[in-house]
Length: 113
Image (cartoon, rainbow, N blue to C red):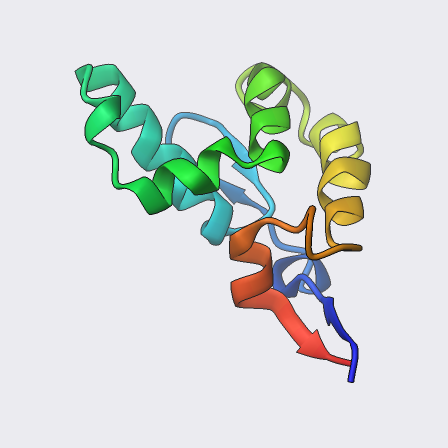
């Protein structure tokens, strides 16, 4: 049987906004991002657990980091965030292949087809 990603949060039309205003499609991606910013602010990023580093350094999250101000509700309208390239293409297109899917998406939202 083939497997595919079905984003639970997307289906429920939910969005997570961190206290700093960063918008995420789910808590699974948000938690690692938020934790990494805390470690970075403390100057202890190197102490971040390896699993968390791998999650935030994944190409999907690297693309998010490159344009993170565009995904902040204090700087960008929510509708613009939801229709941005990252939310409409980068993330969903990453679900098409085991080589591109983010670990958290695979772990939390993979289903048997």
